[in-house]
Image (cartoon, one colour):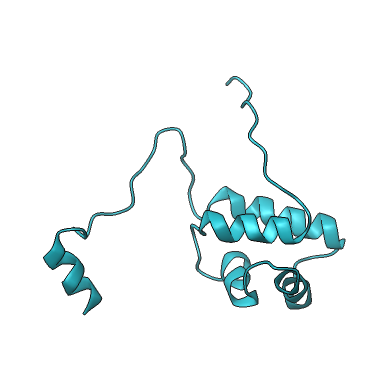
Length: 101
């Protein structure tokens, strides 16, 4: 029903997400792996449900959301949830210049 309403209004045309020449990857988005590495560095062990519960308790996204990133089918998490997970651990993301290729 929601899809029909969207098509009717003209805002959903069924096209795939846009592809960008400057941001190309296969599989899951790189921020998932970076977040996993951050979790493992902070907690000193592999990601597990107990760890995810601790992040959720500190104001991060739900355990189910993060399980989707690390163990599920989530390919492109929302920026706000990734940001919340890092901040729940006391970290923030920073932009830096990429090395010349």
